[in-house]
Length: 382
Image (tube, rainbow, N blue to C red; front, side, top):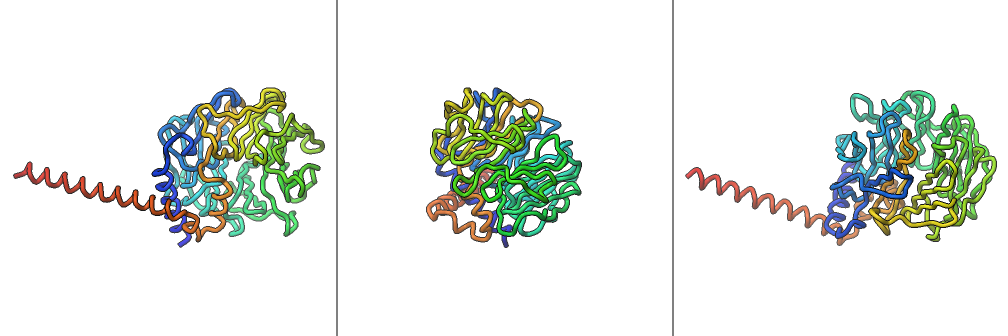
């Protein structure tokens, strides 16, 4: 029943959004920059996505992409020039997290309907505790076959290539983890946001050290690693960007706060010298070329006034960045996934009627066209 409700609600959202769209900002989508965010081009031409929530790049093949949407997964083998749906027989509902293994042979997906693993035989459901669904993040560990999964608030780990996941002990029962990243070049080092604070673990999440940033007064939105500098961590709270060059031992503010007060940061990408910064948030994408002293909203060729999701960097070319945009706010998509069975209750009556009316019109039009063709054949035969 849960799977049916997820599918039905997703289809109605798609139709309701399609009948009310009139301009580029009425859609979400996937966009690519080849110059560290200076210029952007659409990477999903003709798809008109309602909500692109997350994107990942194969570490061994930069032309191979996976995108999670409110309706499932899309994949591309030519860097976004064309896309095909994947796993439609098993993956239902919004996809919040994706990850490739370090060798690119495996892919993992966390959706509203469960956690899934893809190998040469296609997508298969992974065994995970119920408390891990829906999941916020998937991270490939440095060891072969290891994946970390951030569920609603707890951390889980797989040591068998994503087939099974078990809870990682270490967090107090009342604590909540909302973001996690693996630190490149280390065996078991993770950085996370726990109870709004930056935390670092050197043993795969079994114990955590307070990194001295964030808290109740200014809870962190996110924490991120840096492909250009393995010792560097990024974090954001209250529109302020912070950086640590010693894996969380010390932090410093970067430039000025974002111009959009109250922006919730989803992704941070920077040049090796930290002069050029690209930040995605629920207010779109901002870029700085002077270490954050001035920020410019990026609007050319990008949707405006809708939410940008996490940024994905090409592991083989750090100047290439992918961004996703969602017409459905991430918080709303997450809330719908958590409340599963009540998805239809979240649809506005007008949107529901509009979507269903559109479906009825399509069916009527198809029926009339079929009748017309049948009459022409009959007339030609006589």
